[in-house]
Length: 52
Image (cartoon, rainbow, N blue to C red; front, side, top):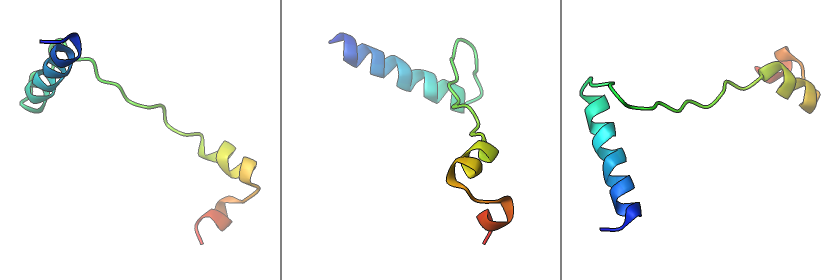
């Protein structure tokens, strides 16, 4: 098989193992939390206005 196929297959196998509780050897990628205050400041809105 191709390298791409092998990589996808390995990733899917790791995802299944992780979903079953096996976290060994699995890398978890989480995006950074957004800076809500900076976003509001950039858009020129206050916290109160953001909730309307």
